[in-house]
Length: 339
Image 1 (tube, rainbow, N blue to C red):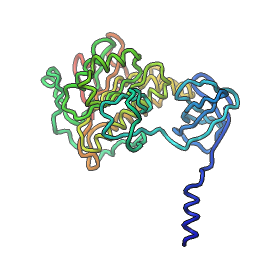
Image 2 (cartoon, rainbow, N blue to C red):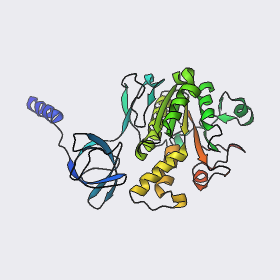
Image 3 (cartoon, rainbow, N blue to C red):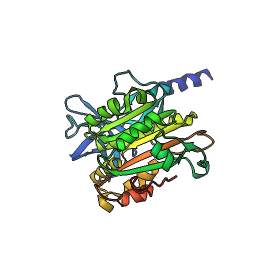
Image 4 (cartoon, one colour):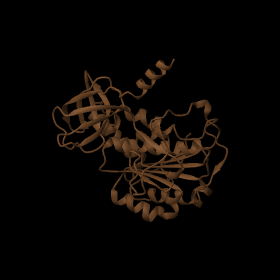
């Protein structure tokens, strides 16, 4: 028995075998490599010629080749560069100290307040089952009289705000974060300009709003894959607080940029364009992400609300992408909530 325990300890502490491959081609946003025994969504490390290590994700397969999309600039990557599989998927650390923090699209802190603590959570969790949902019976107070008086909302609802650029969607988001009755607010700023992100945090949100919020941001110059992950990281953080019985408000600005980022990724890996140039994966991932929000039982005793902003062309009604994913109309005329 003692010998068996010793061998078991050796096996558990032994180094895991590494899966390695080589870069065969780099075109546009993607890199191809011969890398066996990896799966979709797995993270890999690409070693450049100058010693730099670039993290990438497996996004597709073509024959016996693996298609990778880097999460950062492809610095120093060349023919025959070494690729090492990590056998990991993207995860984010969550705990109560997240309130007041600002994270990047991969869930790493960028506010200079030190590393995150807590357990790691996979960012691509499954949505709650239909029978675990609960009825929307409790009113959600936004603190904005125009909304509370004319368009009362309930806890657990998901609401789309549709309007062209420059009419105040971000201003409404900041006001919701400051005045709503949510205990924790998770704000996802996806594809914004860097100057606008800083201005939103300092001027619109302010210290009072930031103290009860978690901001996850991904600027417009980030990789399309990082912009996509930004929405998943924010949703995972909102789920963490919801699972602990808190009233959580999730704000995403904007789903339009999420769809555009997925369009960039889909076209880069060879998906055929369909409606408005969006590949089929957009219409699969959008409801998959939105269905993770809302209230459900018994594992999640309270609720999360989700406000999703979508940018429309100036003077236009929501395009088919908006109608398919949310069945909402412009907020300037009316608001239809979907659950």
